[in-house]
Image (cartoon, rainbow, N blue to C red):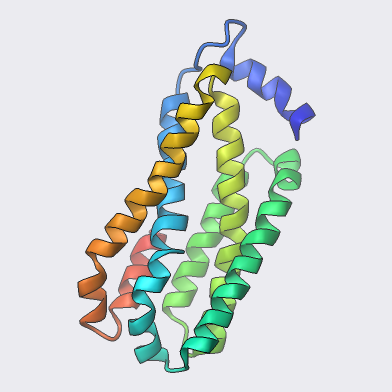
Length: 187
């Protein structure tokens, strides 16, 4: 990835190493991706779990196993992201789109099995999206400002989790509210 990205980095940072136009917007976009995919959709899963369990039934051990499968998907996606970046310039777009479809699929799951399939697909797609977003963002930022850009991206996770926490009361007051929340996150 480093060899393929050097020309892209040089093109966006310029000879002076200054921040490229649009790199701040890309950093904020990546922060939103981190906020939605880690903060809200992944960590918010735990907040919504009582409502999901009430609606789909099953026990907490089954949902723990599903979360493990989702995290395994995330690991595979994270490992595949550098290879995907070599072959496509739209990795963040298509992997985020697949993650969104998987969230919608989880919202419409009829049982624990299909919910698990959808969450695993979400894990895989979000693993690719997060690594690709971080790589592309950090390549667009001057070397001296990459620490700040990384902090802004990861801060999105906290914002997403805080937003999820604010909605927890609403989630728990209706058996199917988690379905609305999952679909909304996808949009």
